[in-house]
Image (cartoon, rainbow, N blue to C red; front, side):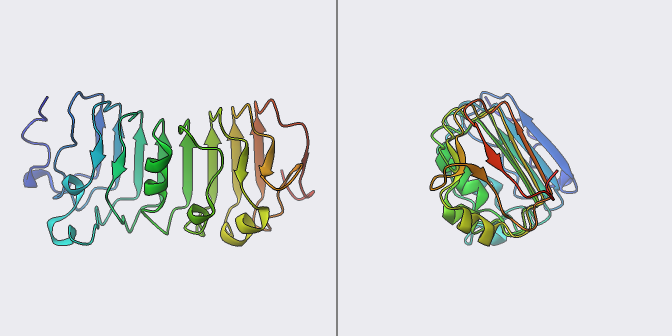
Length: 217
């Protein structure tokens, strides 16, 4: 399958929103000219295995920069996707990753140091969020984790999470039936982040106890 010729045409270089949805193509269209794009949704492209240079502006392709104005990126239902070779989306603030592999999630989290909201859902093989990924989430204010059958812990050490997630104000965890604790090296679910104001734990059947400061909602 081929995308229409107007997709990626310089005449549309002022587009601010684009959705690529449910296509049989094995690659994404060339979108390098869309320098004003603010929101990109890519979902249900089940044949796509790599994402990279087709999204990069020509002037920045050698350093892996993409979409200088992009603020919201949603990737979902890309079960065959194995590689994301973009290094940086400098303005990215909101990222949604759903039904992709663990390696894809880790590549996506590294796209920006300015993420304020991260939603991850049903990522295969993920049992906890890696410490290296937490290091990039210092600006994150809202973390939403849902539908993880394999997730047993949110992270390995509570101390590392507190050190890196210094801006986190809202944490939501939904439908993680095997979650037993916030950190692998703790017995109970307990979070001591000073910035955190609101926590929602829903449908986490294995989680038996938790311990939060009284300031939490």
